[in-house]
Image 1: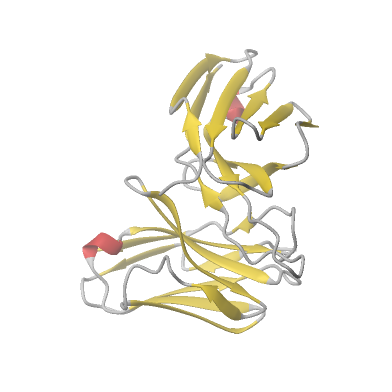
Image 2: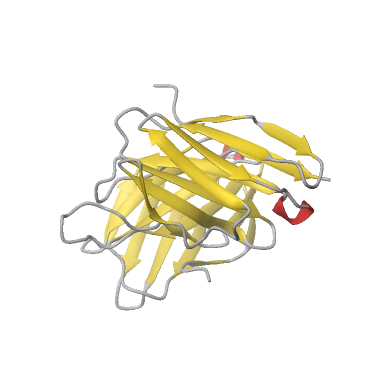
Amino acid sequence: SQQGEEDPQALSIQEGENATMNCSYKTSINNLQWYRQNSGRGLVHLILIRSNEREKHSGRLRVTLDTSKKSSSLLITASRAADTASYFCATGPRANAGGTSYGKLTFGQGTILTVHP
Amino acid sequence: DAGVIQSPRHEVTEMGQEVTLRCKPISGHNSLFWYRQTMMRGLELLIYFNNNVPIDDSGMPEDRFSAKMPNASFSTLKIQPSEPRDSAVYFCASNLGALNYGYTFGSGTRLTVV
């Protein structure tokens, strides 16, 4: 079963508008990550937010995390046609006793974003 | 760094044939993951290795699937015999094997079993 569930499943906007995608998850996490996938390509890591962080920025990206609600959002500001892609949230593994990661990165079903020029 | 390298990019095979997918992770990355992506099931983790040792293969669909990592720079995913329902895009990803690092994905192998 999927750990993360994105909402909406599809989003269509005009260039210059902001795009907001949401992700909900079920179990406790160490971090939450967002990835982008262009059609026919592999996934590209965008941003990682740790469980003790509430907000993080990277360029035009803003990610929030609410661990009490088990939810995250990805905001893309001033969208461009090149932002057209599928966006996935993924929940990261909990730390093991050695402090290294042996866990799985579990992905949601993704949000398909289309930005019209 | 050339990133995670997968081969082949596309594979078309007949049902019953053996298929071998290959992956070269990023040098220095200690963890390697095999994922499968389909429209119906999304991204599924099949197996992952840490320091060349398989840690969790609970996602491997059945005995027809096997994966190896003989050294830090190479891994294979084998399907024998292949079936049409195995058609999917198979991704390999690697990671530093430490907390709070993102994963680097390869471009994937699109497998079609006819």
